Length: 179
Length: 179
DNA sequence: CCTTGAACTTGCGAATTCCGTAGCTCTGTC
DNA sequence: GACAGAGCTACGGAATTCGCAAGTTCAAGG
Image 1: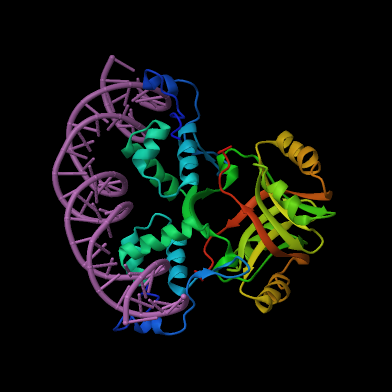
Image 2: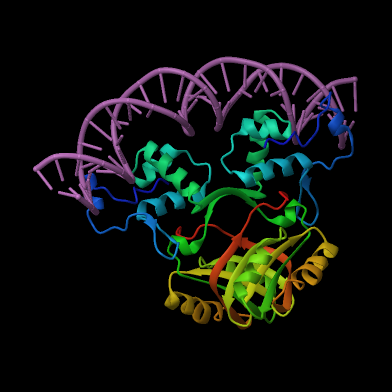
């Protein structure tokens, strides 16, 4: 189902851009402003990361070259990455866990330290009864045990941890915006 | 840095496959068996989801056509998906949270119900003080509140929930295997 | 032993896609 | 108003993808 161009360019292309549409750019808090067209491009690539630029262009109302430039910029800026994702369990990693971490002192420096560990696939600072939540991917129980008890707890500032070992992954999506 | 072929085919191609390498196939629990070559292909695509088949073939020691067939099969089987991923915060979703859920009765049916909700991006059954962990992506505080208090808690079997609102995403990787 | 099927290779042409670049327009700045 | 930069379109050549056919190897089954 090919949806119509998102940035509706009825007659004159300029019509759609005359409004005070936010331009893409970096705001003072470091987060990116993305206009509707870039969002539409991302949506296309969330459906299929290998979709040709020309097809995306048709869907969002841009030329192939423009899409290519936008995608390249989104990748360069780190706003988006195009990757293969799998369920780690099917790829030989037998043990996964979410670990809640409580920190004394600077949370961000602890987060950085954890981010440097290859086994930590996902690190996020949170509000609530944990300061950090970390998802770790390991090959077996021994590996998991070592990472949690030896490595994570050894990081200066880590006060305590609580682990939630994964039993079964039920859902994994990358299609916000498509709903 | 072009790494050498992973499935080392020294002289005779058959050498690498004579061992009792597991063939690809489905086992009785429904999980996939992936041989070393398929894993290597996935690794390549975890680094760059748009990498050309010929380049992948060179890296893993297969022909372009064979890589194409394998990738297609992996996609068809749902073992792997090639998609764009972003930090939802940069894409206009202002609020995210991890929610720990405790369940009375059948955990899996609750997990299924939560998986059906568009806002739940990630649903996993766990061992520990939560039965389920659910990541939700919302547009604002009102939306978040509604999802947690109205929708999730309304699911039959949900005994209690605890929320961890995201403050900052520090790391997000899809490169197990590449380490 | 023969057959069958799966998976791979090689080869090839056509269609498609990618990529660099030149030129145009708009916008903001000094 | 001139100038610079961002963003777009158009276009041509290079590279990739795609479909397909023929031949090979290997494992499993009769």
